[in-house]
Image 1: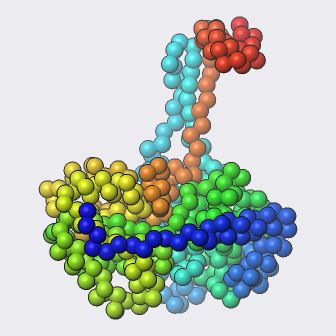
Image 2 (image 1 turned 180 degrees about the horizontal axis):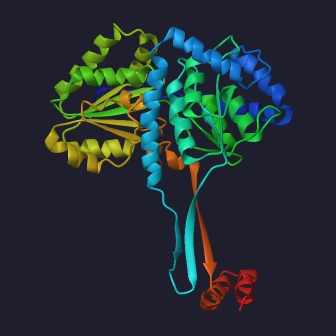
Image 3 (image 1 turned 90 degrees about the horizontal axis):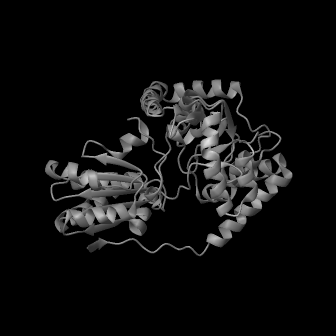
Length: 424
Protein backbone atom coordinates (compact mmCIF):
# COMPACT_ATOMS: atom_id res chain seq x y z
CA UNK A 1 0.00 0.00 0.00
CA UNK A 2 1.24 3.47 -0.91
CA UNK A 3 -0.10 6.59 0.82
CA UNK A 4 -0.60 9.48 -1.58
CA UNK A 5 -2.37 11.44 1.16
CA UNK A 6 -2.47 10.49 4.82
CA UNK A 7 -4.72 11.67 7.67
CA UNK A 8 -3.27 13.39 10.70
CA UNK A 9 -3.32 11.45 14.00
CA UNK A 10 -6.36 12.29 16.08
CA UNK A 11 -5.89 14.18 19.34
CA UNK A 12 -7.67 12.34 22.17
CA UNK A 13 -6.24 14.40 25.04
CA UNK A 14 -9.57 16.01 25.92
CA UNK A 15 -11.56 12.77 26.18
CA UNK A 16 -11.42 12.65 30.00
CA UNK A 17 -12.62 16.24 30.26
CA UNK A 18 -15.51 15.42 27.92
CA UNK A 19 -16.52 12.43 30.03
CA UNK A 20 -16.49 14.46 33.23
CA UNK A 21 -18.39 17.39 31.72
CA UNK A 22 -21.13 15.10 30.43
CA UNK A 23 -21.29 13.19 33.73
CA UNK A 24 -21.90 16.45 35.57
CA UNK A 25 -24.68 17.45 33.15
CA UNK A 26 -26.42 14.11 33.60
CA UNK A 27 -26.15 14.17 37.38
CA UNK A 28 -27.48 17.72 37.59
CA UNK A 29 -30.49 16.86 35.45
CA UNK A 30 -31.19 13.75 37.54
CA UNK A 31 -31.28 15.93 40.65
CA UNK A 32 -32.73 19.23 39.43
CA UNK A 33 -34.85 18.13 36.47
CA UNK A 34 -36.40 20.89 34.38
CA UNK A 35 -34.47 23.66 36.12
CA UNK A 36 -31.18 22.13 34.96
CA UNK A 37 -32.49 21.45 31.46
CA UNK A 38 -33.66 25.05 31.01
CA UNK A 39 -30.38 26.36 32.39
CA UNK A 40 -28.32 24.27 29.96
CA UNK A 41 -30.61 25.23 27.08
CA UNK A 42 -29.82 28.87 27.75
CA UNK A 43 -26.12 28.27 28.40
CA UNK A 44 -25.38 26.21 25.29
CA UNK A 45 -27.98 27.41 22.77
CA UNK A 46 -29.05 30.83 24.07
CA UNK A 47 -32.66 29.67 24.34
CA UNK A 48 -34.83 31.14 27.10
CA UNK A 49 -38.05 29.29 26.36
CA UNK A 50 -39.72 27.77 29.40
CA UNK A 51 -42.08 25.33 27.70
CA UNK A 52 -39.82 22.86 25.90
CA UNK A 53 -42.51 21.16 23.86
CA UNK A 54 -43.33 22.62 20.45
CA UNK A 55 -47.00 23.58 20.36
CA UNK A 56 -49.54 22.87 17.63
CA UNK A 57 -49.51 26.57 16.81
CA UNK A 58 -45.73 26.49 16.32
CA UNK A 59 -46.10 23.48 14.02
CA UNK A 60 -48.67 25.36 11.93
CA UNK A 61 -46.37 28.40 11.80
CA UNK A 62 -43.47 26.20 10.69
CA UNK A 63 -45.53 24.91 7.74
CA UNK A 64 -46.49 28.45 6.76
CA UNK A 65 -42.92 29.77 7.00
CA UNK A 66 -41.52 26.81 5.09
CA UNK A 67 -44.07 27.07 2.29
CA UNK A 68 -43.32 30.78 1.96
CA UNK A 69 -39.53 30.39 1.92
CA UNK A 70 -39.29 27.18 -0.13
CA UNK A 71 -42.37 26.19 -2.16
CA UNK A 72 -40.82 22.85 -3.13
CA UNK A 73 -39.86 21.67 0.36
CA UNK A 74 -43.12 20.19 1.63
CA UNK A 75 -43.75 18.17 -1.54
CA UNK A 76 -40.08 17.12 -1.67
CA UNK A 77 -40.07 15.96 1.95
CA UNK A 78 -43.26 13.97 1.37
CA UNK A 79 -41.74 12.20 -1.65
CA UNK A 80 -38.60 11.32 0.28
CA UNK A 81 -40.73 10.16 3.22
CA UNK A 82 -42.75 7.90 0.93
CA UNK A 83 -39.60 6.11 -0.27
CA UNK A 84 -38.25 5.70 3.26
CA UNK A 85 -41.60 4.41 4.50
CA UNK A 86 -41.92 1.96 1.60
CA UNK A 87 -38.50 0.45 2.32
CA UNK A 88 -39.18 0.35 6.08
CA UNK A 89 -42.45 -1.47 5.40
CA UNK A 90 -40.65 -3.97 3.15
CA UNK A 91 -38.08 -4.56 5.89
CA UNK A 92 -40.88 -5.11 8.40
CA UNK A 93 -42.22 -7.90 6.22
CA UNK A 94 -38.99 -9.83 6.82
CA UNK A 95 -39.94 -10.05 10.51
CA UNK A 96 -42.26 -12.96 11.15
CA UNK A 97 -43.43 -14.36 14.44
CA UNK A 98 -43.40 -18.09 15.03
CA UNK A 99 -45.43 -20.35 17.30
CA UNK A 100 -45.89 -24.01 18.02
CA UNK A 101 -42.34 -25.02 17.08
CA UNK A 102 -41.44 -28.30 18.80
CA UNK A 103 -37.79 -29.30 19.24
CA UNK A 104 -39.17 -32.41 21.01
CA UNK A 105 -42.60 -33.84 21.74
CA UNK A 106 -44.57 -31.82 24.27
CA UNK A 107 -42.50 -28.61 24.05
CA UNK A 108 -43.87 -25.71 22.02
CA UNK A 109 -41.69 -22.66 21.38
CA UNK A 110 -42.24 -19.38 19.61
CA UNK A 111 -41.44 -15.70 19.43
CA UNK A 112 -43.36 -12.47 18.99
CA UNK A 113 -42.27 -9.27 17.26
CA UNK A 114 -43.11 -6.45 19.69
CA UNK A 115 -42.64 -2.71 19.01
CA UNK A 116 -41.01 -0.58 21.68
CA UNK A 117 -43.43 1.44 23.78
CA UNK A 118 -41.55 4.72 23.34
CA UNK A 119 -38.50 6.30 21.77
CA UNK A 120 -36.79 9.65 21.35
CA UNK A 121 -35.56 10.61 17.89
CA UNK A 122 -32.65 13.04 18.21
CA UNK A 123 -32.29 15.36 15.20
CA UNK A 124 -29.03 17.36 15.17
CA UNK A 125 -28.88 21.11 14.65
CA UNK A 126 -25.28 22.28 14.81
CA UNK A 127 -23.79 23.54 11.55
CA UNK A 128 -26.91 22.66 9.57
CA UNK A 129 -30.54 21.80 10.44
CA UNK A 130 -30.48 18.12 9.47
CA UNK A 131 -34.20 17.70 8.84
CA UNK A 132 -33.50 14.61 6.74
CA UNK A 133 -32.59 12.77 9.95
CA UNK A 134 -36.14 13.36 11.19
CA UNK A 135 -37.39 11.13 8.37
CA UNK A 136 -34.71 8.50 8.92
CA UNK A 137 -35.61 8.07 12.59
CA UNK A 138 -39.33 8.73 12.98
CA UNK A 139 -40.53 6.84 9.90
CA UNK A 140 -38.99 3.46 10.86
CA UNK A 141 -40.23 3.98 14.44
CA UNK A 142 -43.73 4.77 13.21
CA UNK A 143 -43.73 1.86 10.76
CA UNK A 144 -42.57 -0.46 13.53
CA UNK A 145 -45.57 0.56 15.61
CA UNK A 146 -43.90 2.48 18.44
CA UNK A 147 -46.71 3.89 20.58
CA UNK A 148 -45.04 7.16 21.61
CA UNK A 149 -42.49 8.85 19.36
CA UNK A 150 -40.89 11.86 21.00
CA UNK A 151 -38.40 13.95 19.05
CA UNK A 152 -36.01 16.72 19.93
CA UNK A 153 -33.70 19.10 18.15
CA UNK A 154 -31.59 22.01 19.40
CA UNK A 155 -33.13 25.46 19.02
CA UNK A 156 -31.50 27.80 16.53
CA UNK A 157 -28.64 29.53 18.35
CA UNK A 158 -29.83 32.55 20.28
CA UNK A 159 -33.51 31.80 19.70
CA UNK A 160 -36.37 29.80 21.19
CA UNK A 161 -37.26 28.10 17.90
CA UNK A 162 -36.32 24.90 16.11
CA UNK A 163 -35.63 25.34 12.39
CA UNK A 164 -39.06 25.36 10.68
CA UNK A 165 -38.03 22.72 8.13
CA UNK A 166 -37.02 20.38 10.94
CA UNK A 167 -40.45 20.79 12.56
CA UNK A 168 -42.19 20.11 9.25
CA UNK A 169 -40.05 17.02 8.64
CA UNK A 170 -40.71 15.69 12.15
CA UNK A 171 -44.43 16.22 11.79
CA UNK A 172 -44.47 14.63 8.33
CA UNK A 173 -42.53 11.64 9.68
CA UNK A 174 -45.00 11.01 12.48
CA UNK A 175 -43.46 12.43 15.66
CA UNK A 176 -46.05 12.58 18.47
CA UNK A 177 -44.10 15.10 20.57
CA UNK A 178 -41.45 17.62 19.49
CA UNK A 179 -39.14 19.40 21.93
CA UNK A 180 -36.75 22.34 21.48
CA UNK A 181 -33.85 20.68 23.21
CA UNK A 182 -30.47 19.27 22.22
CA UNK A 183 -27.07 18.27 23.51
CA UNK A 184 -26.17 16.01 26.41
CA UNK A 185 -28.99 17.60 28.41
CA UNK A 186 -31.55 16.21 25.95
CA UNK A 187 -30.17 12.68 26.26
CA UNK A 188 -30.20 12.92 30.06
CA UNK A 189 -33.74 14.33 30.14
CA UNK A 190 -35.18 11.59 27.93
CA UNK A 191 -33.25 8.92 29.83
CA UNK A 192 -34.27 9.87 33.37
CA UNK A 193 -37.27 12.11 32.84
CA UNK A 194 -38.09 15.59 34.14
CA UNK A 195 -41.28 17.45 34.94
CA UNK A 196 -41.84 18.35 31.30
CA UNK A 197 -40.33 15.25 29.70
CA UNK A 198 -41.45 11.69 30.23
CA UNK A 199 -38.55 9.23 29.82
CA UNK A 200 -38.38 6.87 26.84
CA UNK A 201 -37.22 3.31 26.25
CA UNK A 202 -34.73 4.08 23.47
CA UNK A 203 -32.87 7.10 22.10
CA UNK A 204 -31.85 7.03 18.43
CA UNK A 205 -30.02 9.52 16.28
CA UNK A 206 -26.61 11.09 15.73
CA UNK A 207 -25.20 14.15 17.46
CA UNK A 208 -22.00 15.88 18.46
CA UNK A 209 -19.44 14.38 20.81
CA UNK A 210 -21.43 15.50 23.87
CA UNK A 211 -24.55 13.76 22.63
CA UNK A 212 -22.59 10.60 21.86
CA UNK A 213 -20.89 10.59 25.25
CA UNK A 214 -24.22 11.16 26.99
CA UNK A 215 -25.72 8.19 25.13
CA UNK A 216 -22.78 6.07 26.26
CA UNK A 217 -23.18 7.09 29.89
CA UNK A 218 -26.99 6.74 29.91
CA UNK A 219 -27.01 3.36 28.17
CA UNK A 220 -28.63 0.83 30.44
CA UNK A 221 -31.02 3.37 31.88
CA UNK A 222 -32.19 3.78 28.30
CA UNK A 223 -31.58 1.83 25.10
CA UNK A 224 -29.62 3.43 22.27
CA UNK A 225 -29.16 2.69 18.60
CA UNK A 226 -25.34 2.91 18.69
CA UNK A 227 -22.59 5.43 19.39
CA UNK A 228 -22.11 7.56 16.28
CA UNK A 229 -18.90 9.50 15.72
CA UNK A 230 -17.75 11.76 12.87
CA UNK A 231 -19.20 10.93 9.47
CA UNK A 232 -17.08 9.02 6.96
CA UNK A 233 -17.04 7.71 3.41
CA UNK A 234 -14.67 5.17 1.92
CA UNK A 235 -14.53 4.90 -1.87
CA UNK A 236 -13.06 1.99 -3.83
CA UNK A 237 -11.99 2.99 -7.33
CA UNK A 238 -10.12 1.45 -10.25
CA UNK A 239 -8.35 3.18 -13.14
CA UNK A 240 -11.61 3.87 -15.04
CA UNK A 241 -13.38 5.66 -12.20
CA UNK A 242 -14.23 9.35 -12.63
CA UNK A 243 -12.05 11.47 -10.37
CA UNK A 244 -14.42 14.45 -10.42
CA UNK A 245 -17.32 12.38 -9.10
CA UNK A 246 -15.19 10.77 -6.41
CA UNK A 247 -13.88 14.17 -5.34
CA UNK A 248 -17.43 15.52 -5.13
CA UNK A 249 -18.47 12.61 -2.90
CA UNK A 250 -15.45 13.10 -0.64
CA UNK A 251 -16.28 16.78 -0.21
CA UNK A 252 -19.97 16.04 0.36
CA UNK A 253 -18.88 14.00 3.37
CA UNK A 254 -16.19 16.44 4.44
CA UNK A 255 -18.55 19.40 4.77
CA UNK A 256 -20.41 17.71 7.65
CA UNK A 257 -17.83 18.85 10.18
CA UNK A 258 -14.08 19.26 10.58
CA UNK A 259 -13.77 15.70 11.96
CA UNK A 260 -15.43 14.04 8.95
CA UNK A 261 -13.38 11.61 6.86
CA UNK A 262 -13.21 11.04 3.12
CA UNK A 263 -11.01 8.12 2.01
CA UNK A 264 -10.26 6.80 -1.47
CA UNK A 265 -8.72 3.36 -2.07
CA UNK A 266 -7.42 3.10 -5.62
CA UNK A 267 -5.66 0.46 -7.69
CA UNK A 268 -4.03 3.03 -9.96
CA UNK A 269 -1.62 5.70 -8.70
CA UNK A 270 -2.45 8.11 -11.51
CA UNK A 271 -6.12 7.90 -10.55
CA UNK A 272 -5.24 8.65 -6.94
CA UNK A 273 -3.38 11.80 -7.96
CA UNK A 274 -6.30 12.85 -10.17
CA UNK A 275 -8.65 12.52 -7.21
CA UNK A 276 -6.43 14.70 -5.00
CA UNK A 277 -6.20 17.34 -7.74
CA UNK A 278 -9.98 17.24 -8.27
CA UNK A 279 -10.66 17.70 -4.54
CA UNK A 280 -8.32 20.69 -4.37
CA UNK A 281 -9.88 22.20 -7.48
CA UNK A 282 -13.46 21.77 -6.30
CA UNK A 283 -12.66 23.20 -2.88
CA UNK A 284 -11.87 26.56 -4.48
CA UNK A 285 -15.50 26.97 -5.56
CA UNK A 286 -17.17 25.32 -2.55
CA UNK A 287 -19.19 27.61 -0.29
CA UNK A 288 -18.67 25.30 2.69
CA UNK A 289 -14.92 25.10 2.13
CA UNK A 290 -14.15 26.47 5.60
CA UNK A 291 -15.31 23.15 7.06
CA UNK A 292 -14.68 20.79 4.16
CA UNK A 293 -11.11 21.93 3.53
CA UNK A 294 -10.02 21.38 7.13
CA UNK A 295 -11.73 17.97 7.21
CA UNK A 296 -9.97 17.01 3.96
CA UNK A 297 -6.56 18.28 5.04
CA UNK A 298 -6.73 16.71 8.50
CA UNK A 299 -8.63 13.49 7.83
CA UNK A 300 -8.71 12.82 4.08
CA UNK A 301 -6.74 9.90 2.66
CA UNK A 302 -5.85 8.48 -0.74
CA UNK A 303 -4.24 5.05 -0.65
CA UNK A 304 -2.90 3.00 -3.56
CA UNK A 305 -3.09 -0.82 -3.63
CA UNK A 306 -1.70 -3.34 -6.10
CA UNK A 307 -4.68 -5.71 -6.05
CA UNK A 308 -8.43 -5.49 -5.38
CA UNK A 309 -8.10 -8.28 -2.79
CA UNK A 310 -5.88 -5.96 -0.73
CA UNK A 311 -8.49 -3.21 -1.06
CA UNK A 312 -11.19 -5.60 0.16
CA UNK A 313 -9.14 -6.59 3.20
CA UNK A 314 -8.48 -2.96 4.10
CA UNK A 315 -12.13 -1.94 3.60
CA UNK A 316 -13.45 -4.80 5.73
CA UNK A 317 -11.03 -3.93 8.50
CA UNK A 318 -11.89 -0.22 8.30
CA UNK A 319 -15.66 -0.97 8.35
CA UNK A 320 -16.75 2.45 7.07
CA UNK A 321 -20.07 4.18 7.59
CA UNK A 322 -20.57 4.70 3.84
CA UNK A 323 -18.85 2.48 1.28
CA UNK A 324 -18.86 3.36 -2.42
CA UNK A 325 -17.69 1.09 -5.22
CA UNK A 326 -16.46 2.43 -8.58
CA UNK A 327 -15.01 -0.54 -10.46
CA UNK A 328 -15.45 -2.25 -13.83
CA UNK A 329 -18.62 -4.30 -14.31
CA UNK A 330 -16.59 -7.51 -14.51
CA UNK A 331 -15.26 -6.96 -10.97
CA UNK A 332 -18.29 -5.40 -9.33
CA UNK A 333 -20.33 -8.44 -8.26
CA UNK A 334 -17.39 -10.42 -6.91
CA UNK A 335 -16.07 -7.37 -5.07
CA UNK A 336 -19.40 -6.57 -3.44
CA UNK A 337 -19.88 -10.14 -2.28
CA UNK A 338 -16.53 -10.01 -0.49
CA UNK A 339 -17.26 -6.70 1.26
CA UNK A 340 -18.70 -7.57 4.66
CA UNK A 341 -18.30 -4.58 6.97
CA UNK A 342 -20.06 -1.32 6.13
CA UNK A 343 -22.98 0.79 7.29
CA UNK A 344 -24.44 1.13 3.80
CA UNK A 345 -23.10 0.16 0.37
CA UNK A 346 -23.40 2.30 -2.78
CA UNK A 347 -22.65 0.42 -5.98
CA UNK A 348 -21.60 2.20 -9.19
CA UNK A 349 -21.32 5.81 -10.32
CA UNK A 350 -25.10 6.37 -10.27
CA UNK A 351 -25.55 5.35 -6.64
CA UNK A 352 -24.35 8.55 -5.00
CA UNK A 353 -24.07 8.37 -1.23
CA UNK A 354 -25.96 11.66 -1.04
CA UNK A 355 -29.00 9.98 -2.65
CA UNK A 356 -29.14 7.62 0.32
CA UNK A 357 -28.74 10.58 2.65
CA UNK A 358 -32.06 12.00 1.57
CA UNK A 359 -34.48 10.14 -0.57
CA UNK A 360 -33.81 6.69 -2.09
CA UNK A 361 -35.26 4.95 0.97
CA UNK A 362 -32.35 3.36 2.84
CA UNK A 363 -31.44 4.86 6.20
CA UNK A 364 -28.62 7.36 6.64
CA UNK A 365 -28.24 6.89 10.41
CA UNK A 366 -25.30 4.52 10.25
CA UNK A 367 -22.48 3.15 12.43
CA UNK A 368 -19.13 4.96 12.37
CA UNK A 369 -15.67 4.36 13.82
CA UNK A 370 -15.48 0.69 12.75
CA UNK A 371 -18.76 -0.14 14.52
CA UNK A 372 -20.01 -1.60 11.23
CA UNK A 373 -17.99 -4.70 12.16
CA UNK A 374 -20.78 -5.65 14.57
CA UNK A 375 -23.88 -3.60 13.75
CA UNK A 376 -25.80 -2.15 10.87
CA UNK A 377 -27.59 1.18 10.80
CA UNK A 378 -30.95 2.30 12.11
CA UNK A 379 -33.78 0.34 10.52
CA UNK A 380 -37.18 -1.04 11.36
CA UNK A 381 -35.56 -3.62 13.64
CA UNK A 382 -34.08 -0.87 15.82
CA UNK A 383 -37.58 -0.27 17.17
CA UNK A 384 -38.72 -3.90 17.46
CA UNK A 385 -38.05 -6.62 20.04
CA UNK A 386 -38.01 -10.35 19.31
CA UNK A 387 -39.37 -11.95 22.49
CA UNK A 388 -39.56 -15.71 22.95
CA UNK A 389 -42.18 -17.82 24.75
CA UNK A 390 -42.72 -21.50 25.52
CA UNK A 391 -45.49 -23.85 26.53
CA UNK A 392 -45.07 -27.45 27.74
CA UNK A 393 -47.53 -30.31 28.00
CA UNK A 394 -47.40 -32.56 31.09
CA UNK A 395 -45.61 -35.17 28.98
CA UNK A 396 -43.07 -32.66 27.71
CA UNK A 397 -42.43 -31.39 31.23
CA UNK A 398 -41.89 -34.92 32.55
CA UNK A 399 -39.55 -35.80 29.70
CA UNK A 400 -37.24 -32.83 30.24
CA UNK A 401 -37.46 -32.39 34.02
CA UNK A 402 -34.78 -34.93 34.97
CA UNK A 403 -32.40 -33.67 32.27
CA UNK A 404 -32.71 -30.07 33.50
CA UNK A 405 -32.40 -31.11 37.13
CA UNK A 406 -29.13 -32.94 36.45
CA UNK A 407 -27.71 -29.99 34.48
CA UNK A 408 -28.65 -27.57 37.28
CA UNK A 409 -27.09 -29.77 39.97
CA UNK A 410 -23.92 -29.94 37.91
CA UNK A 411 -23.68 -26.14 38.13
CA UNK A 412 -24.38 -26.21 41.86
CA UNK A 413 -27.75 -24.49 41.47
CA UNK A 414 -29.82 -26.74 43.71
CA UNK A 415 -32.90 -24.51 43.82
CA UNK A 416 -32.94 -24.65 40.03
CA UNK A 417 -32.88 -28.43 40.21
CA UNK A 418 -35.72 -28.48 42.73
CA UNK A 419 -37.81 -26.11 40.56
CA UNK A 420 -37.47 -28.64 37.74
CA UNK A 421 -38.29 -31.72 39.90
CA UNK A 422 -41.16 -30.24 41.92
CA UNK A 423 -43.44 -30.18 38.87
CA UNK A 424 -43.31 -33.96 38.38
